[in-house]
Length: 326
Image 1 (cartoon, rainbow, N blue to C red):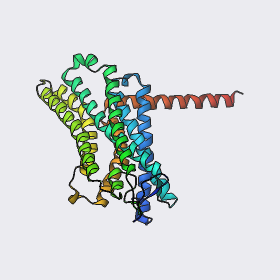
Image 2 (image 1 turned 135 degrees about the horizontal axis):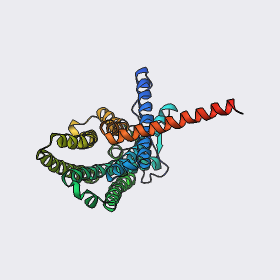
Image 3 (image 1 turned 180 degrees about the horizontal axis):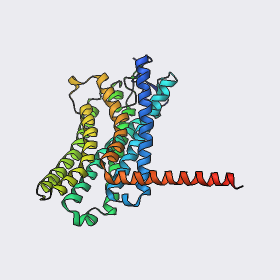
Image 4 (image 1 turned 120 degrees about the vertical axis):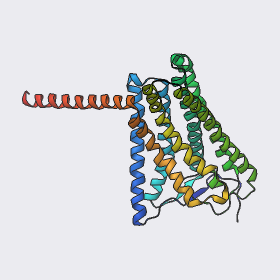
């Protein structure tokens, strides 16, 4: 094998997720439709939160950041995969590969901590409702959001920088549909055991610290809810938390399945399918879960649709009047 210490100008080969059989072409159509739906639904959620004054609260600000991360995540992975599939090419430059690793790790890590911040928001809202404006003020909300992006960015920068610093062998075929640090490290022509160990520790910390915080928050929420005497209050509290818990379950379930299993139980084919689920399909579930389970979001959605329908009807009437009264 020919080694090279300079990855500049090197093209890697993405083996991809789908072939060109009839079945895989159908799955490609599903992926493309899911990508477009995810993009539109998350952008619409961001716009709805910004435009409706009733949604100008810390909870919905954090939700808008979650939607922003989901938009960036699908844009990081799917367009390159779709372009390669349609043009029958599989190459990706080292710069493009590094960008995918950096953005992917930044967004996944940032979402881990953002979901923990959302759990704290629910804890304060249910356990300390009278002190909510003080404990969950705008400054703290901005600090938690910036911290989520920063921690994810630092992790992404380290993983992308170290991964691309390794010398790579003559064969540069990545058995994945996007550049992911573990898949790329397998091609390195040097001992990467120390880096893999620290990468594993980093992934464990990035997952377990937010998960522990979420479990502690919901443990305190559960204790508070069980002490409530009103059945209506308990129902409202559970309804408030159910959307966030569903998103947490989908996100952490797939991430833990991918990164915290022993190597002996891992399969490349299964990993690619699970990766497709949390990079392509999970982002489309988040706005759907919050719009279906949240009365405030549904109310804002009905008002926005009503305003749009009213404006469209008024425009039609004005146009018709102008036609008959030139």
